[in-house]
Length: 381
Image (cartoon, rainbow, N blue to C red):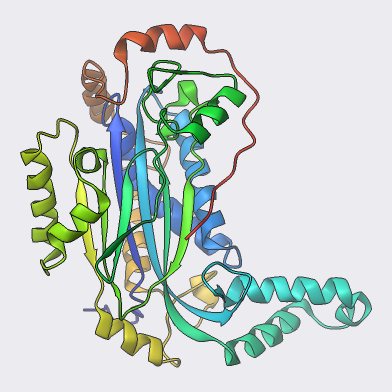
């Protein structure tokens, strides 16, 4: 139930982080990434979410680089579900665009085309007028944004068919191999410089010039009549199970917890030897349709909550409470408990299948700093 004075917006954040060279990076990301993302979204309310996800991943890498255990890294897959009032846009892959970025773009266009007239109108009034006009043509839609680095994967079940919404960043991928070569590295035995099996990851600061943290991103408008559920999992599942096979296994299991267990048990039965983390997220089609038809309902908060009608959502209130607790305990975003560091130093003895331990020391000595690759977030949906 919602707390008093809190508006429930039914937004969602789901993520899996699969660590290598210890659990340090994965544990850190599990505790911090949602907080960083929430702060970045609030600071940049008119920026498209895929760009904000890329900014978040970049911020994560910057913070991890300041911390000990620079060998530790993790693959990541993140899903963000948001209600948005969107307007038709034939140039968009989804067929529509969220109002906030569209309004900002429209105001910028008007100012460039009618500089003299725009100068006589206060910027806030101009933006508010433009957004008001756009809202009249808008429809309420449930939008799924995803971002991933490495080989953790997210799959959408649409009318029984598996749709992959992520990209496997592996040494065996031709495009990633070309990117690594362009950055001054090479692929040996399908590993970056013979060391790391994934070509993109969070952390891995000692190889950051090659193993970028820029994610592959997608934007998908949820269709409540045919979109059924999401599967997020690390490569321990996908190494032994196809996307469609996973969907078929759990489509008729309505309890997400039980569905996740079925997938893990299936992977173990196929003798998966890697880490196994799995999450199933089911959509409530009736609730989605009901909210979509209620245009008067507050669906989210953008910008400063102190100046925004509707207050905080329940999820945002929980995030703020988490940040408050972190501050009270002295564990800010740049602080990691010493016991966690010691625990990960022990884990370094067993770096995991993504990392070739024999090549690690040699790579540290041989890899010379290169100019950062010119690569940004990829898109699609």
